[in-house]
Figure 1 (cartoon, rainbow, N blue to C red):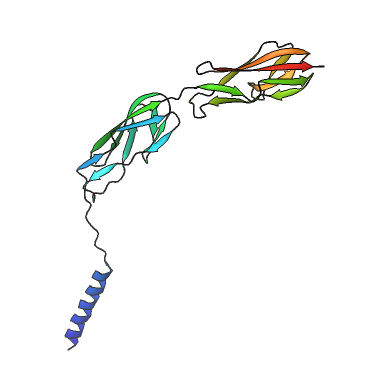
Figure 2: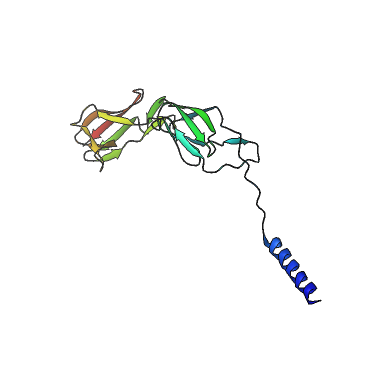
Length: 199
């Protein structure tokens, strides 16, 4: 009788142990990985590539991403592509099983179409200052840098900011008139404000 109780106790203990064990599913390796074949971006844009594997139940870990030319576009460990400069490159993803997939990336720039100033004419008193505001169009142009010039610095001169750059701030130096012109680095588009300085 005691032996039967002991066997029953052992049996129940085994059941308890088995009940507490979790049987993990076996890893299913992929037999194929793919990316969208082509990606077009504008400088500054980002997009995350999503790899697809077959079969759908396959497990992939530790994906390795690489850009053939990081000066054109970079890619991080999550597949996020960032457009750096105009040109073409290839983004590659590789699995721990040696499978690879590629995406051709083209990065383009957006040219400047126009530039405007908040004032086309302006009257100042001597020793007054004013900051002209330039708007480069379209707003998503790749290179929105501009340069400033004055037709008569003895009347109206350009003032540099704390960074040592001209930003459209002008100083009325003496009575007279002068044209302040802003010019885009991309496309040489211009806009002008005629400034009149009064005593």
